[in-house]
Image (cartoon, rainbow, N blue to C red; front, side):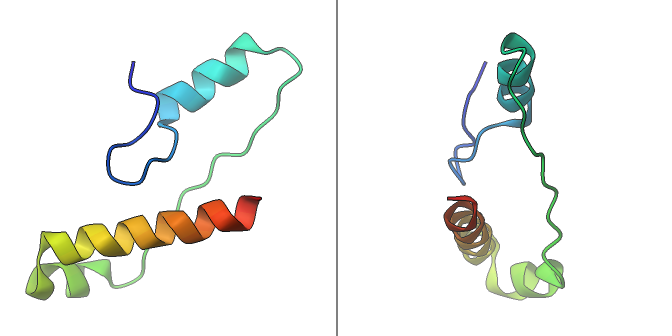
Amino acid sequence: MVARDRLTEVSTRDHFFERLSNEPDAYGVSLMVDISFFKKLNDPYGHLTGDLVIKHVAQILQCMQK
């Protein structure tokens, strides 16, 4: 099983839930994020730019959790 997403380096959903199920006293939060108007950026500027936006948003969220 892949533990981290290749693009964002965030734990994958499966890895996250497997870790929670293996530790009875563990708790965690799952977050779903909608990047408003992402398609309007991704389509004209390309997938590389879109990937950079996704990566940057993931980095911001990781900084906020610490």
